[in-house]
Length: 451
Length: 152
Image 1 (cartoon, rainbow over the protein chains, first blue to last red):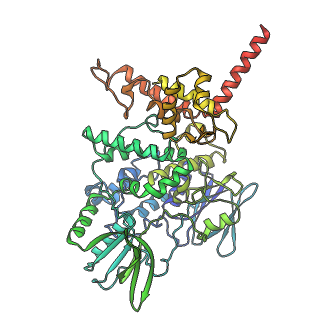
Image 2 (cartoon, one colour; image 1 turned 120 degrees about the horizontal axis):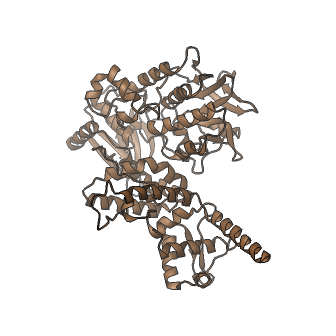
Image 3 (cartoon, chains in turn cyan, blue; image 1 turned 90 degrees about the vertical axis):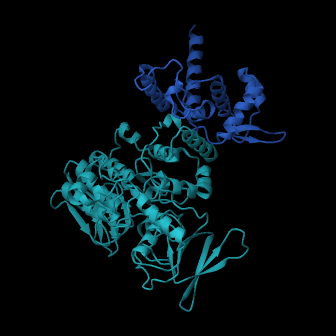
């Protein structure tokens, strides 16, 4: 029997999912990729065309298939040989081109349909899933996959501009305030500089931490047997800092420890007690992020230069709101030690707070609709939807679906590490294998790899 | 490596997994049940508390209880807090690493290479065994023992 699989969302997660379905399926399947823009592989991270916006993962880790780790590098050598010479961090803008090629290579003629629509609901039936679309029509499917990303609204919120879609200000002397000091801020600053911006840029975040920079890749070989699973976050963070200290004392680099932890992070998160996860989010996530998600050296050098010249200033403070006075904007920022928020003058304010935000009342699009209809529920901390270990969607009653799965950032709360390509392709492999076997749970061995 | 501390700690956790929900146990009762030194046990319980596996209630009605349900606490996880990384030999751990004194070439040492595999096996057994599983094992074993006594 030919299975029909509907994937909601055609960004990198959806495209990697489709390619894995075709590669690991036995050919007897059809895939409909529902993507409003009609473009494949151009989600939040990869719609950029700016060559300064680099991957923060090395090209050797970007293959869409866990089974063929050099798939991306081989494609790169043929289609963009210029980047194979310029180092391991390549521009993100070429990834959609790669994903399209991967789909062309794997999808049999006529088996992949890209539907320029948005998906607004999914209902699990006895033998399939009914997927409803924004125009009121519905698609019958055997399996459905949520690959929508999570929590970022299309347009900027109120007076804040969206860094992904906004055009740089025409006035090159404009005063820019950026809310957030992570990698999105870095990309935004680079875009401004590429545009010849001369005006002052102020970036604000509560802790004012900048992403660290990448160095040599020499991960410490850690085993799960070494890592204190199940312990409180307090214990875990002390263990980690002690380990870093010891490793540095022996002539190593702290990055080796972070990179050594990388394959185990999903397991650590899985066993981290709920109150520890909460505490981690509140107190440690910002520190974790700047060490875990690092800047490629080329970007770090440009950021260092503008910090030195004073054009870019990092301010520690909490962004409260933005107001408009005439044609000027003001960002209200509460700095540590201040009793009252102070207004920061700006011509434009970019919202670079990132994708990882806890759900508020009005969840956007499909994710909100799934929760409302009881087909899904929020993960305990509100970080995306809840899934089981094999990426099956958990419904309002706490039961895993046998037909609806999730991949990528929407699974963040369940897995923590689910936004980078190496994790997404592993999820895709797992879901594809399960669907290829008719929806039955995969053999124990392959489940164990993705906790 | 399983030390005295690890053994006592697991026994204490086993004891705590058997007390009724909402109650606490004092270290004196645990120490007496297993014939351990109370002082040593207190130090062990302090470590388990530090690791987030047990909680304490202060005061006259005070004592220890598990911080999570027995199904959620894995034996291997508690053991790492008690004894450090799961490793049958200290050169098989990255984090509590000690080179053997008589070691000529670690990279090709047959003992170490075998023990590296053993530690993965230890982890896969102990990381899937919860305190609740441990209870049922004990119950099954004591049931068998009773039957044996009846027959003989």
